[in-house]
Image (cartoon, rainbow, N blue to C red; front, side, top):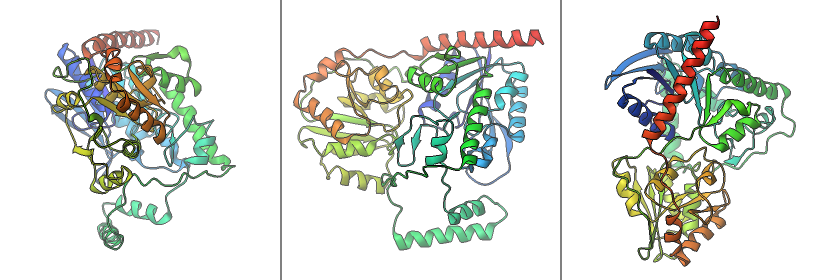
Length: 473
């Protein structure tokens, strides 16, 4: 079987949960004797023309649609490009024809128009799509308003128009336009110079954790803007439903798509497995003495709630709790988080880590903390922790409650509440024997070898459905 995997990020460089899963899936398929190719459309690093680039890595064909304009913050009146973009669609169709896959498995449409689904169908391929986020009805992808306020959905474009349609200031838009023109070298150098002068006057960039105040937006948004968002949502839905098989990564994701008009019968839940090395061993945990070691793993960003844990740590006596942030942290963010933690001596920043370090990290900590403000659609870090037998403290939104049961194998706290997170930390500090009780109920998540057999069956179904359509023409 020949499989084309489609993502936004480079399969060998991106470190998101989706990229890690797709990379592991590709390796597992190749290990089973399938031929795997990859197509991706990354964020432009420098201005240039839209083109299709080819390379081969480790015997795997890689097609890159370079300089896609679809990752720009379009105003509402130009959002139709998320659905139809003739040049991008033609480049994608060229990649499909040259690779000749039996099945195309889409994981991320950000950076590609949704019309590529129809192009793949017309090439005679089976088409599978895994829905990892909410891009088809939320251009911010994670149903979060500015200020990281959770959103319950588009409401037919009304909430999008009210809370998310504001455009950057004119001067910032002009600077972005200048920087996107390769031929405007002098003007681009002037913009960069102006930024350098501003940095010298005002100091270093502020921490990303200094969140802007949430804007309430106009009570009655412009009807044209509402219509543009509603048209985008309807057009995306029509395109996505053209797939042969439609998968979601959790029951939570499925419920949100059903809420936005997708037939429940078309959505199948197939959670991604944990993707960790064999060095990560499952073992029951118990209290090893104070300080109890709490670990935060992954991107240290406001989206993932790192600042909530830093602030909550201040309530824990230093001799009883240690808090280690594993992930890349800018200097200004480290200073800000330490300030939130009241300069708690037990707060440490261990820097970025790769898969080779993960087994040692999971062995060192006693509890994994997932304080994400974005409602996790799956939460791969949590699965990695459970693969090592670790109990989890996590926010109660999204998909986490599907595998973290409060008081059984972990503790859940109210999303966004520092007080509730502090309470969960202190519960473990004050009753450390709970570590053993929670860990005893952790069940190791499914690994890739089992999952790849399920995916292979899905691929065969999609190929059969595509063949039936071809035969009926």
